[in-house]
Amino acid sequence: MAKRTVSFLGPIASYSHQAVRLAFSEQEWEFQPVITIDDVFKSVQNGEVTAGVVPFENSTNGSVVFTLDNLADRNGTYPDITVEGEVYVNVHHCLLGHKEAGSLLEDQLDGSGTRTPTAADPSPSRPRTKPLTSLKHIRRLYSHPQAFGQCTAFTSTYLKGVEIFEVSSTSKAAEIVSQDKSGTWAAISSQLASQIHSLDLLGKWIEDRDDNTTRFLIIGKSPASTADWGVRKHANGQKGTKSLVSFTVPHESPGALAEALGCFQAFNLNLTSINSRPSLVNPFQYIFFVEFEGHKKQDPEGRVKGALDKISHVAESWRWLGSWERYQ
Ligand SMILES: O=C(O)C(=O)C[C@]1(C(=O)O)C=C[C@@H](O)C=C1
Image (cartoon, rainbow, N blue to C red; front, side, top):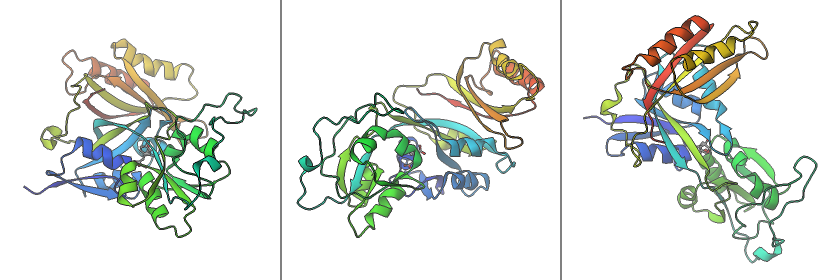
């Protein structure tokens, strides 16, 4: 049988790639790295690939707006995209670059790893780890915006004043730094990327919190029959099901949002996350996203059906974005 393809934010060695490796078998699936999260959505919608994997939220830094904006689908570009599963990745960042010959780590460290309190941050958190080598020579720091947000204690303690460059992924950052001839650029990326690009480890486990975890969504094109996808199940076993809907409410009407959320309460459905993004119709109007426990197609008591019927009367517009098995 011809292999099916799953796309993800590349280049290889990104955390998205690691999520794909956790969920899909390379024997049965072709792995296709693409350049942006938008490209993952496009490749699934136009049928170029069967599945895609996109980051959805990080436990330290919150929602991934690039993914929410695609799910918001303001222009109707992705009418068939649905969420078919989720994958959790423990994200441990490293600082990758080129060691400066002959420099001593002691030259740089003040020993305490403390940051100067400022009015904006009167009690700054301490970095969890110290650099493995002097960082005095570093002039540029490359990474994905999410990763910068997960390593603030380390960067503001040991890389003060270094110029920041936001790029499309952490593995892209490592690729760029591997081409640096000056030896003064560094990337926040994975340990895997240091091996692939033969970069030195200048810091290890530099994230602010050791429980730093990113949740990825597996997307497909409805009606997807995922039963034969062979997505690997989490070792902890299934913990029920989840669904995602997006909706807009009449903004002038008081209580409209509360009424929409009440649709889930009315059918005793537990909400697990709420997000919003600007509607881009008028300033300060929103598209809301609600995730709840329950499955549209495995709904013996009709509770999910009941809530969705009710929300279709309350919301200005709404869309069911998928139901899947939950593992955490
Ligand atoms: O840049 C990567 O390696 C990605 O896969 C993207 C991404 C994200 O957008 O959240 C994924 C996991 C980490 O939280 C940091 C970056």
